[in-house]
Image 1 (tube, rainbow, N blue to C red):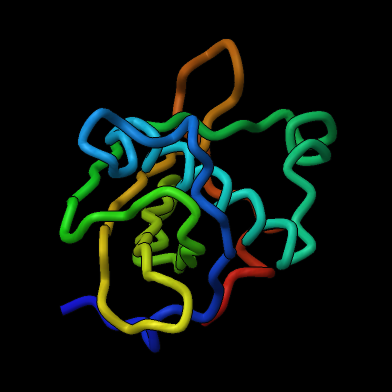
Image 2 (image 1 turned 180 degrees about the vertical axis):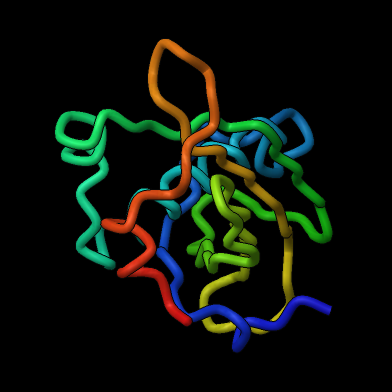
Length: 139
């Protein structure tokens, strides 16, 4: 069971009208956008400069897997917290675990997994995760 307390970081977001579908809940494709926003904000919180990694280290991340589980409805104008944590740190891959909670509540409304592989742009060959990121990740 996914617990809010399992996550060291979450990013708040208010659901906008344009993110709602005909059933009055968040349209499924927006969950990946929510996850992407929270991941970027988490990296910012860690003071990791993604653009510097690309420019100075010649590395980038390729998304190789994304999953979303829909556990409860999220509606227009609700404030949600998108929680993020590194779940598995490999040699060249990084698995992120994400979860969505209504602000102030503990019930998980959605959870997901994002897997990145570090690579050198243009080659599509995996490369070890950069020390500039590893040094900032917890534990």
